[in-house]
Length: 462
Ligand code: C5P
Image 1 (cartoon, helix red, strand yellow):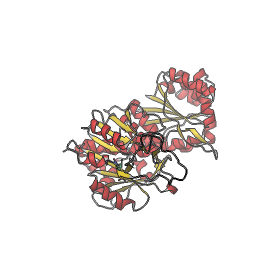
Image 2 (spheres, rainbow, N blue to C red):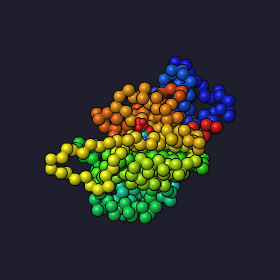
Image 3 (cartoon, rainbow, N blue to C red):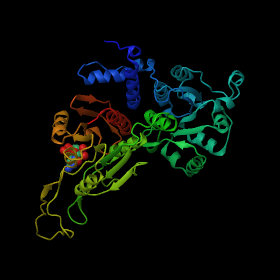
Image 4 (spheres, protein in one colour):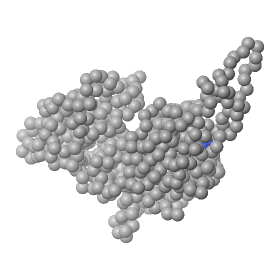
């Protein structure tokens, strides 16, 4: 396999590469391979093992993070979190609670962090060497992941009977927690009280997410945020550089549309809006001004996003037109292709002896194609293609028909569970080729796509 020596590159190229890699959440070598891949060279991506050895001076360069790992099954995700933080240039000093050692070993944590792992409150050696007061102060940020119900309760009531809780009580630094617990524990009145108390004390939260628990058959709020979400939250608190999408305006659509049959009935689809809303939130975290036109969904509005709620495809089109011009349009909504031509003004009644009413359908406006061909076309136009067959061929056709720059293609066959579910495996179809992403959570897809959009808007000039 060809080898790439980033060190030998010209300084200005290296700087651009560093920014692009950081925006994508990749190492510089992975980024180079991707660029070459896009040019048609079939060079495979770096393996995770390779990428850990390459340390880009990234968005968290020189930042010191004290990572307190609580005792939960999600503790294993901290290994990935440490790797990703170090790839971005952060120094990670790990603290394990006694019980956390049941879930991850100090050896693995220490090897990834390349630092000593602290576990004891009254360790003669550690107190002499660093001490819990110094530990709590010699960091730019304290991150608790997973934050168990027990740790949160200790924090809320100011207990300090082990190293982790003593550090949390002694610190004068900002604290970010990533809760992880069983949904019943998360929703228990005691945890609710502790949450409110911690929020009042200025503790920042990332997650938890909704999803399957480790215990079989359990699901709900309580899954720890994914490592990339935690990284994004840390970057939001610590990153020195300006957010990559600051000053950019992005128009989005998300969710289904409802096309009325009569005043009480409508035609809909299974879109939950989860993927579109997650992308809107991820773009906002990168500093963009996001205006989201949402069809009827049951999930909350994403944070820091202006949401315009609509019901039908025509209302969605009108709202999108009002929001142009913009720097980018990301059209994720599952817009109904057809609506009823003969919408009844009154509820259609069942009459004895009469045949079932026939629905006549007419085509809805194609919002994405409208934006793609618009006089005020944004610099970057991205569409989605939810298909159950001929995924890539259909996506490529859509690229031209709708004048889009990228089509994010996903298989929504019933068996994939994508529609309404929490995971997604997408391919990004561009005029340069197809980028295949592994199966990941919709939040991770959102993070990666937002980073890709940020990189494109930084480089594409018209
Ligand atoms: O043609 P199809 O519905 O598969 O295209 C999907 C893409 O086009 C999505 O990005 C969707 O948001 C957009 N679309 C639209 N208006 C329509 C139909 C689809 O914006 N009427």
